Image 1 (cartoon, rainbow, N blue to C red):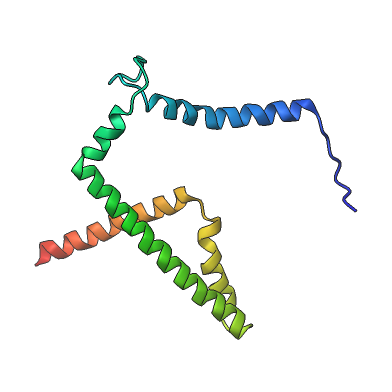
Image 2 (image 1 turned 45 degrees about the vertical axis):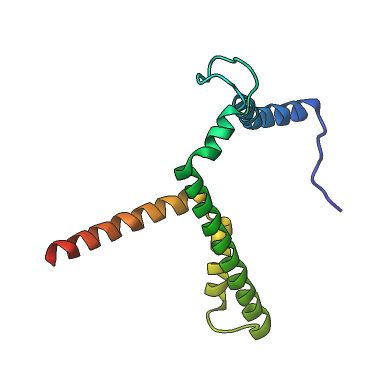
Length: 139
């Protein structure tokens, strides 16, 4: 049996609705204003697909989109392959020396916030830049 009391109050549902409104209303407004015909965001002058057509005509931006999609496809494919191999190893070999560390490396990206990952990559790239800069000055 579950001994945790359940409080089904209207205040709880109002707070939940306010939270979702706070999170999703700006996204909805941004989507609506993306169809604005005017160049200024603050002035609504009518519904139009003008900016989306201009977006599709920008060759530099479309090249970036193609590159992003290719990188996303390749990284997702690599993740599926490595995840399948890791699952095979964990299932096939059972207990082995270093299993805890191996399981930690598999689950770490799931529990690590994106901000921490981004900050860690930033610090890594700064350190790499300093190392390569010093190597370039020596040569």
